[in-house]
View: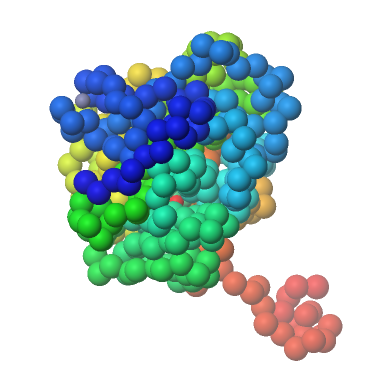
Length: 424
Ligand SMILES: *Cc1c(COP(=O)(O)O)cnc(C)c1O
Ligand SMILES: [Zn+2]
């Protein structure tokens, strides 16, 4: 693999904050922090292991900036991370969803609305952490394989940081995703194939001299990238007044976000920042790309890859890398994995908009649709504190609901016409 020379001085001077090593999720083997992502012994995925012996307090966090860097003491970043140019994502709204809750029969429901991030999806969180790792490792090009949102987040972060970017997407994405990702001025390459084929191509690129100096945020920087999703867990807990939700519904693409939110909750408990209370994690997929949900329902612990066919393109990963770990988390916490079809996704996008004034992308339609299904099938406790994630902005997936909504009437500018249209 082409790896840049690492400035070991930078690595010992707290460049990665409390991160102590990388460890294999399968066999536990530990590695020095570096741009590696798979275990040399068992090929298991590597994740960041920490030394939190210094402790972290609520006061320390609350004194920090109103973005993800308030949680810097819990992330693989240096203490002065906020001083370097980045998009400063996070601290998005936790909306008290009384109207949606009433409609669904949930007494204490919240929407964590991550459309409020700089490039309008949760991906700014993961990219911000990967960017720091890329800088530490001396990478000069920021890259990714993307289902759409990640391409935009990488393009924007690289633009702000003054790095080159070159991102790869499947060629059939929504115009809103392609146009916004391209606007940041980096190179955007559309590949004729599915996301899984784009991903395979990127793995080849990393192994080739062409990829020298390239940091693929979700491939060779994946262990660092994944940690960004923990900030969703921290924020939700802090915004609830330093307590964990009892139930949470999370979308699944690769499954990274879901597993890292669980990791974040467990860290908060371990550090004594929240009370040790049980929580249930529920995963949400679109029926047209539901390999994890299918495995859950069949009681399997391996994922059988599928070819995606759904309007929820941001979640269209047919062979999700973290799928088996999602099954573990949902089983351990007493949650479940569910899926909804594309019609239910569209209905749920409109339901969320109509009840809470939040216009989510198709991934938000998937989580809200699954939330509804979980209530209807008795899998959720209607009295428990429940959070549902909206991970992206509906403006990027207008194609999904176009033709199902529009002007109530088109009239001449006269009162007569208004009356004639039956609207007076
Ligand atoms: C990428 C993405 C997710 C989740 O991705 P994971 O690969 O499961 O971490 C969820 N919602 C949106 C809108 C996304 O773009
Ligand atoms: Zn291993």
